[in-house]
Structure formats: structure tokens, C-alpha cells
Length: 75
Image (cartoon, rainbow, N blue to C red; front, side, top):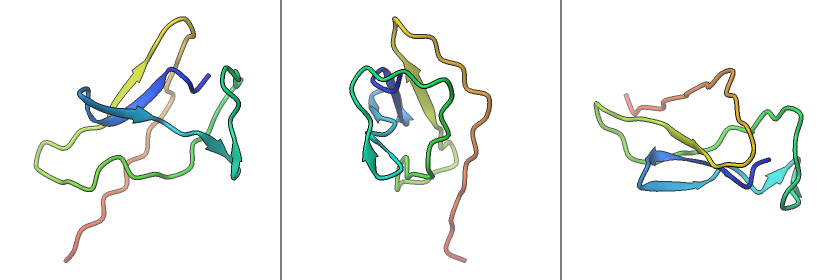
């Protein structure tokens, strides 16, 4: 269930993880057995204490088995 899953660079700046899968909209309330999200930008800001915050809201369980972070720099 992606309705309750939010991501951002701080807990005060969260947004839904995604609203689409394979270029098709994800129906509200749809429950996935597993889900592999496409690469997406969390924030365009960078500092020495950059973070990725995930929030899952009840009543559905959530387990993150991995998270890959890609950092692009100029230089």
C-alpha cells in the first residue's frame, strides 16, 4: 500500500513515494506484495548532513529491505 508511504529530506518535508507504476496510475488502496520503486529525486539540496526520511502510516505494515542512494556532484 503506497497511500501511507512518504519520503523526503526531513520529516517536515514529506511527499508520497509515487503515484504511478510502469507509467500507469496506482489505484488508491491497492496493496502490493512487493514493490520496487523507480529512481526518483528526493531533494535537489545537498549539505554534509543530507538524509532520506521514510514514513509509513498505519494500518498497513511496511518493511524496507534496501535503499539505494545515488549522489550526483559537479566535479
